[in-house]
Amino acid sequence: MLGILVIRPTLAGLNGKPTSFLEWGTCESDEDLHEKLAADQRGERIRRLSQLCRSKMVRLQGSALLSLVALAAIAAAGITAQVG
Image: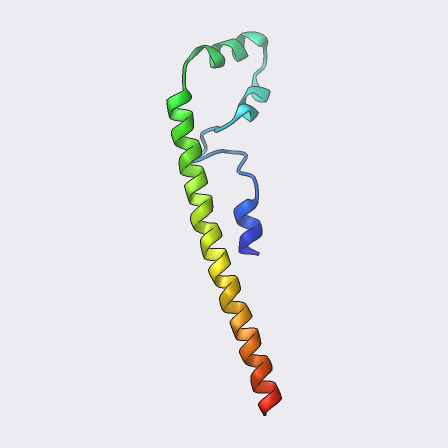
């Protein structure tokens, strides 16, 4: 379940700030879109995307570890059931 939450898309971006072209769909007019595209925000956008990616990778590592622990517990329960 944690793995599903990790790979789920983050539409709101990091800290509520948009991180992709999805923000452009919220523009009311072409002028709004041109204003958003006019400002060079590549550095900030790359930083936010990197933070988002790092956060997801840390959660994915935790998910993998918890999955291994769960498998070990299931295996131990199976062995105990056969012995007992």
